[in-house]
Image (cartoon, rainbow, N blue to C red):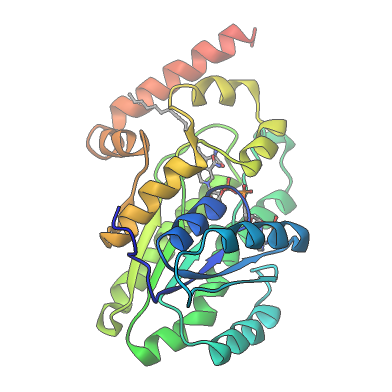
Length: 276
Ligand SMILES: NC(=O)C1=CN([C@@H]2O[C@H](COP(=O)(O)OP(=O)(O)OC[C@H]3O[C@@H](n4cnc5c(N)ncnc54)[C@H](OP(=O)(O)O)[C@@H]3O)[C@@H](O)[C@H]2O)C=CC1
Ligand SMILES: CCCCCCCCCCCCCCCC(=O)[C@@H](N)CO
């Protein structure tokens, strides 16, 4: 990795206080960049900011944070405006806000669907809508959104999650095209299962069948994903596919029926194992 790739660059990282967002923030600071971290929990933000401050390598670097739910446009807008007035229009917006609530369909309510869409889709859309006017005015900027392997194929128990991650792909597709003349770049990150606080929470409700099926794909560390993410952003790669997400992507793209056949067989076996 080029040592000071992010020198004199500013990145806003939504969801940068934990998991993949935290590791991505660390890498950017280590590579000379300044960051603004946005998440809800103030205590966690303070702790991470302290750690990030220790990682700075250049005098001019800064680490800022504020607490905001990124689905709340009314609150986010003035915060971003102040930030830009104090510094300048940032170079990157990285969206990592999102959560999974794996559950059997018969246990899911309409509210579960709405909440997951609200956080995972609108929670990434609102920061985009907030920053786009600035990026468009300056004819520059780079936006990376976080989907999932569940953003290109589906699996049991992810009924509320999958649509929200497909939505991220659809949104990014439309914006990538429309904003090309404005010199604004886009990436989509599609992580496989990754060891994060979010994943630990997800495992509390995860049906056994889902756990068994998920074992097919190797669990990555948040740091491993962050490294691939940063590398992808540096290369301005549109689709960023860490670990085995890449192989499954290729398989599902070219041999979709094989993948579905495999998944269906595995699901059947898992159910049998569980006496269902
Ligand atoms: N871990 C995994 O296996 C996978 C995760 N993903 C996706 O990657 C992204 C990051 O995942 P992961 O690192 O596991 O997540 P974590 O739950 O570990 O971290 C999520 C981060 O987002 C913040 N956040 C969550 N909701 C909001 C909100 N409404 N407003 C502002 N900030 C918020 C959290 O802080 P706070 O709670 O304080 O607000 C935290 O900083 C998510 O979009 C997730 O769906 C995709 C594939 C696999
Ligand atoms: C021959 C073809 C083989 C294909 C095998 C496919 C096996 C399925 C693996 C399931 C991976 C689930 C990733 C979800 C990650 C995610 O988004 C959640 N952790 C939410 O945070």
